[in-house]
Image 1: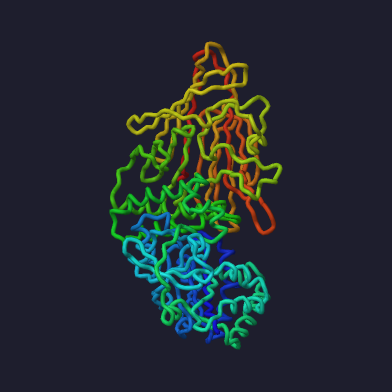
Image 2: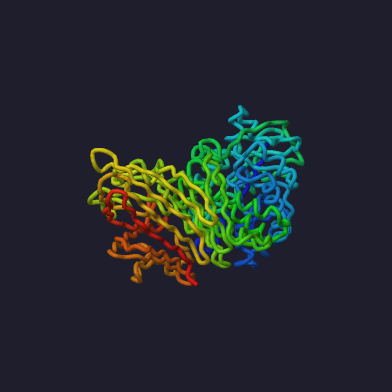
Length: 635
């Protein structure tokens, strides 16, 4: 009586990870595991190293890569491949799926000297259409969660055997991760885990138990000393126990083969099923910011598609597809601003490279349904900057890309605050009722405070300008958006007309305002233009701040300045972003924080700097207020 135990360890760090975190995990987890694996050459292991992590090792720890290469050459370890940047394959066009998978395989071959036959899927996201791309890329099997098999009625024994599936005549092997062993290893004693493995012993040894999870569970999520003791004891027990035999997917297939044909629905592990509503692309609907990144990726895809696949733009494009910033479960994900920043950095760099190679015209305006919601967006593009306008969402600016080489950045990579399940009992939390982007307009009620604005106090905006569905037209190199809104501070609504004109200049973006009182009597408004920017976030230790009329503030400071007309975003070592208003205003500036879950409970996380230009307007019947904003990059 024997059980085959397949131990699959997944090593990964996201594109854009903080260097301090990466180096800490390297010390606490990766070096620890390597040391233990070296001590047990008879232990058969299956390891996956994500592309972003391999690239980090090549840059920072080339000696460690050579150590891994020697370890793998001993013959007891099977190495899995996967997508180059740990990309979520179901979100990618088919051609990108194959490109990512082939590039991921080549990277493993180049750096580790192994030729993967099996693939690890980012976040273990399975989709029934994936076999075609995996087959095209030369992979023979993948690892998925037993949750996916149970959803179509497979039995407990069924999900402890290997199966074949196919799509469009391309076949692919499937191994299932055992969810129960994933939850007890290493959190229960080695004895308890071993007893669980023995439950699947039979005379032929035809059943396997596959543990597939993160390397960081050893030494990072759990302290290194205890993790080393646990894993060492577990391996020693496996060595002396004849009822459990360590194996790898290839070794298992060589002796047991496949059980038969199966068709699996979309799915992943149990928690991901819960967070995504059962289908990973739902994150694009749940978070507008995730959808924005995804549609930016598709937009850049159009531009680089005319280049050869060996053009450097393709690598940048692939790195912008790393999965971690596109979704959110319990921790981090899209709420981590440095991950969003990194996605845009790579996508914008790929875009700039493509435009340079294709000699794109200097200024162009594209009318398109950029975010695929059925409404048209207006994309103003130049060699230096992109400015994307959404007429149906208050005529707001939802993307502002700087394309300067070495400073590729989207200043609108901000994050709105959503109601998450873990925040339901947080009494002072109110989610945002609009997307935190720029050139969104309000009329505030009398007595409103800066805390009302940042904290989303209900009913402080007495108009419908913020979410108004603007009409628009394009005239030469300008975009005009217009809306006739209502203001309800009195007993009956009063009409207010706002027109904004967006235009790309040589060094930045110009936005002209025309606000008209179309009532037959005079009105008094506190008319406000809101901007939210994510400044360039550098590595730790570099100052980030802002200035109002030349007075410097820390990025976490709140400020209220009368008769101001200039705000600048300041990141040490990078050009400043300067916002100038022709009309002076009462300017509010404040950091906007989300509440994000950590192991120690919800904590504040910086998501952008909010800036509010407040203009008290006294307008006679038919009178107009004019103002011009200039948003420029220094130098």
